[in-house]
Amino acid sequence: MNEPEMLVEPINLFEPKHVKSFNSMRQMLTLATLGTCLLLGILGTLLFDGVFSSNGKFWGINVAIFALLLVVSLLLLRKLGQRPLSITGYVLVVSGLFFTITMAWRDSLILNGLSLIGMLLTINLAFTLGTRRKLQPRYVSEALFDLSWSTKYGISSYYKLMSQDVQWKEVQRRWGAEGRAVLRGLVITIPLLILFGLLLIASDARFERMVYDLLDWGFTPKKVTQYVVIFILCGWAAAAILRGGVLKQGLTLNQDYQKNFPTWTLGTIEIVMLLSTLNILFLGFIAVQFSYFFGGDALVQSLEGPTYADYARRGFFQLVTVALLVITLLLLIHWLHKPSRRLGKKLYQLLAIIMVVATMIIEISATHRMYLYTSVYGLTELRFYTSVFMVWLVVLFVWFSITVLRGQQARFTFGAILSCMVFIGLLHVVNPDAKIAEVNLARLQAGQRFDLSYVTSLSADAIPTLYAALDNIPKSKNRCQDLWRNLKSHRVLWVEKDWRNFNLARHEAWKLLSSPSEPKCQ
Image (cartoon, rainbow, N blue to C red; front, side, top):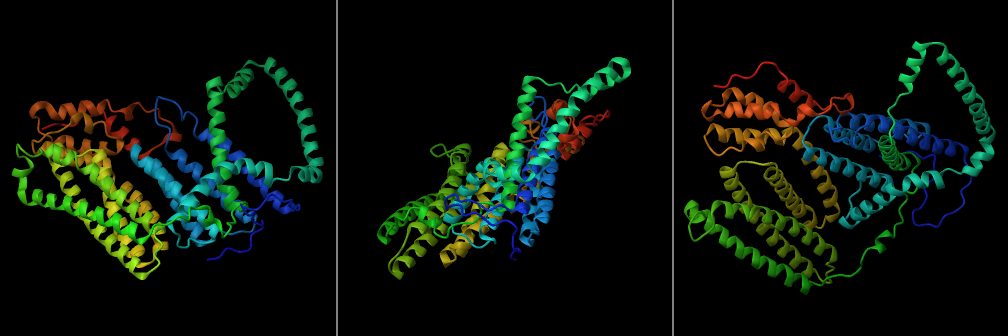
C-alpha cells in the first residue's frame, strides 16, 4: 500500500548539501518533532530514574510506556503532517509494542535481551519501509546495507535534526518577535516569582515546609549525571525514529548504492573445489556418527571411547557452530559466485544441496548429544537456548533451500528476519525458565541428579513452577525444605518496588514468596 504524498520532500543521502527553500508548515512540523524529542527525553528521565542503580531491576512497564508515548507521538506528528500510516506501518508498530511489552511480562535476562533484538529488527524493517516504500524482497547484501545505513542514520539523526532540518535563521527572522517576547516575559516573571515566593515562605512555616518538600528533588552530582545520560539516550532514540518516521529526511536511497559493495567474484572451479572438499569431510564425520547411533550406550560409554559427558559436551556446541558457519558460507558463496555457464549454476546447486542435507544430519547428531547430556546432567539456560537456536538454523536451511537454491534469493532475507522475530515471540509464550524448572523437577521426582542451587537461581519466571512443585517433593533428604529455603532468599524479594519497574513475573513471584503460609512438604 503506497503512502500519500508527503509534506516534506526527502533528501538524497548521497547528494551534496543544498540550500532549501523555507516552508513554514514544514518548519513547524520540524520544530514540533524536535520539541517532541526533547519532551520524550524529559519523560524518559522520569520513567527510567534509577536505571543505573545496583539495588534492583528497573526494566519493566517503563519500557512499554516509553514505547507507547513514542508511538503516540509518531502518529500525532504524522497526522499533523498529513501522512497517515500505511497498513504495513501499523503492523510494524504492533510488532515493536509487543517486544516492549514483553519487558514487563518476563523476568529472564536472556528473554529481555531477545526482546531488544526483536525491537531492533522491527526498527530495521521500518527503516527499509521508509527507504523503499514497501517491504520488498531484498538480497542479503541489501539487508546488510540497510542495517549499516540505519545505524548511521540513527546516530546522526539528533544532530541533523537540530543543525540541518531546522532553518534557525529563517525561523528567527519569521518568528523571532514572538520568541523575544517569551524571553522578556521570563526575565520579568522569574525574579518577581522568586521575590514573592520568599516573602510568603517567610510568613508561614507550613507553607515553607510544603515548598521545600516540593523543591527537594535530592539532586547529587551522580543523580544529575544519570538524568543527563538518560535524557540524551531517550531523546536520541526518539529523534532517530521520529525524524525518519515523520519528516522522512534523508531516506531516499540512490539506486546505485550497490556499487559500494565489493565486486570481486569466485569462479565455478573454486566453488566446486571448496564445496566438494567440505562435503567429503562432512560425509566422513556422518559415517562416524552412525556408529554411535547403532552402537548404543556400550560404545558411547566404552573405556576406549568417550564418556557421555565427552560425547555430548564436546560435540553439541561445536556442531551448532558448524551449522551457523555453513549457512553463512553458502550465502556468501552464492553472492560471490557469478557462473558464466548454466553448468556452473547447476554444480553449485547440487553441491549446496548435498551440504544442506549433510548439515541437517549433523544437526540430528547434535540433538542426540544434547538429549544424552540433558538426561544425565539436567537442563540449563545455555543448553535450552542453544537447542532453540539450532532449531531456528534448521528452519533457515529449509528456507534457504526453498528460496536461494530455486533462484529466489531476494525472498530469503525477509523470511529469515521474520522467522527470528516469530521465534523470539514464541519463546516468551513458552517461558523457558519454567520449562527448565519442570525438566529438573522431574529429575528430582525420579531420584536423579538435581542441582538445587542452579534451579533456584533462575529468574522469577520459574518461581510459580517451583512453588507449585513443593507439595509434591518427597521429604527424604529434606529436599523440599532446602528448596523452600533457597526460594525465600531469591533475589526477586530484594528488588526495589516501584511502579516504573513493574514486571508481571516478578510481581507474581513476590506474592508467592511473601505468603505467610509455608507449603506442606510430604
